[in-house]
Length: 125
Image (cartoon, rainbow, N blue to C red; front, side):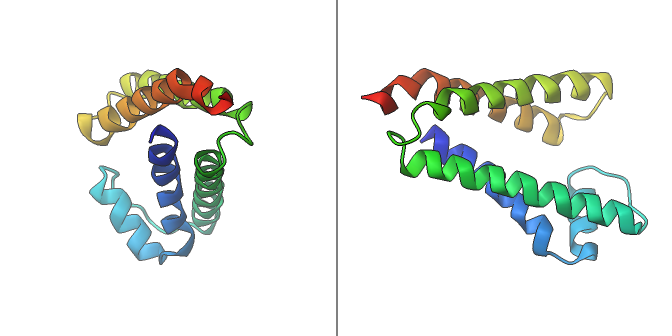
């Protein structure tokens, strides 16, 4: 269940690979960003990050589908979610971000990462 939540949470980033740039910037504004003027390098980086994050989601999906095959990797990916939660928490506070989406992203990383770590032993059985 936790691996599936992680997979969905990361795979959704693939939207950023395929959506039009106006749709991407509109979504970012809906999530609290200020209006973004077009910059080709910014679009390139955004597509790169979206692809990388989406592929991380594919990996979480593989861990979910074949947990015994990848049992050794599961605790590592639970820990990575916790580290990401710490990064979000530190920078969310440092940048004085509003609660949406900062709290939800941070909480999701802690809950999902903790759940993955808690149940990681079950994959070895």
